[in-house]
Amino acid sequence: MCMKKTLLFVCSMLMCLSTQAADFESAKDAVKNMGVGWNLGNTLDANDGTKTWKTTAEHETCWGQPVTKPELLKMMKEAGFGAIRVPVTWYQEMDNDGKVNAAWMKRVKEVVDYVIDNGMYCLLNVHHDTGADGGTFKSWIKASGANYTKNKEKYEGLWKQIAETFKDYDQHLLFEAYNEMLDEKNTWNEPVDKKDGYKAINDYAKSFVTTVRATGGNNAQRNLVINTYSASNAPAAMEALELPEEAGHIALQIHNYPDWQSESHARELVDNLISNIKTKLLSKGAPVIIGEYATFSTWPERDWYVENREVALYAMDYFIKKTKEEGIGTFYWMGLSDGAYRTLPAFNQPDIAETLIKAYYGSDFSGKFPTEKDYQIVYTVKYEQEWSELFLYGNWNSVTPLNLSEYKAVRVEMDEIPKAGSLQVKVYGAADGKNADGSDKFKEGYYALASDSKTTTVTFDSSQTGSVVSRLTLQTNAGAQTAKLCKVVLIKSDNSEVALTPTVAWGCTLTANSTPITGIRANRYVAHSSDDRIYNLQGQRTVNPQKGIYIRNGKKYVMK
Image (cartoon, rainbow, N blue to C red; front, top):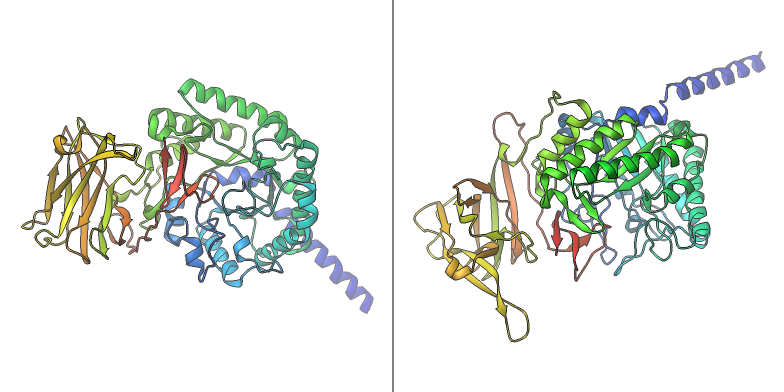
């Protein structure tokens, strides 16, 4: 009798497991159901090996992005996004035995919950534990046999901890094995030693899948994502990737940052990419995700959203339509809502966001795309010393200067009338020859804010600043003080206006309180103080940036 009860219990458990497996959607269905995805970039993936973090907030904000709030993910959902990739860098939160700091794991779980609770898919990964070495940064996971042998136990231990933490989550959570894994030579697209590099990628992928599956629970059927070498879309790299198990719950990932150039060129690049994906990846029987793409190219480094927005938007529209046709998933890299915009929350690139969503769901899709204009914002600037400055336009490496034939003035609106002589707009002109030491000579103009009004309009004087303005700042001329700034706009020659978002220059801190205008839910926020550290697109801190695209204070800029 006891034997019968035992057998009945075992059979019952097997039936439950079988039902659970059947109910867990396939990777192909998951990729289809995701719709359009977005990367919560430069946040939990941020890192700085020269620092020891006292709090998770210090770690999360070290690349200039604010602490993530659930309102941001709600905004993405309401816009129409169906999936969020949450990149996470772990090495700074692991002790010598490979154990993850409990506070960091808790914070990662909180952000994952923000995504899941808003009804979206979440793709959680191991991010800048891989990547190109540079400066003080050296990734510990490399595509080499020697590295795999050395770090296999540590890598599997990391994934065991992650998998155990999330084992009860449903099919809306996917795991991604590693980000852009390079060989010991930091080679992109294809490893120098192809046999060794590709074998290491496949070995790491197998370790990942085996480790996650062994933790049981929903991880036995969880959809898992593995990447090609360096997440490359090169045909050889795609072809070399092997399936670590039967393809039912495995998806394959690549990244894509092409140089669009023109509408016809964009079509050509997208068509060629999809053709290669079909023959080199989809033919393996697993679905494909393009986990990163954007309007900018990494080689040569330039952003078509800045250089030719019409081409950029066309490329995004065509890209989404064609990938949807083939059942290929997509996650836009980081932009759309960036820096302080994430805290409002609002889109700083609403036209790209809307283009992506409508390309997928159709032009009649009604998503919500709030912008900064939907909020009343008051910036509080604390000037800590004499000659402290706040950027109104540009930064120390401005590459999109104002031509005074197009712009004629800047208007500054204060919350209170400034004290006489306490604040002034400082205008930096274009280079006007060279100084004796060979450095650029700049013309500068100073304009005191009116002390009898909350609003001051400063008309540019080309005799002082030259024909081009490289940057504008609001500078104190009266030592430490606090100023409240409601609005700053550039005035074009046709009297149209362009709103500006102030950022820190030096000697001051910046916070902001926002109140939503009609139709936007209430949300108070404090903007993160910036520190002007510079990072390249691979997330490495750069002291002397050369020509290329970089991230500073959570925003992308191009160094020419």
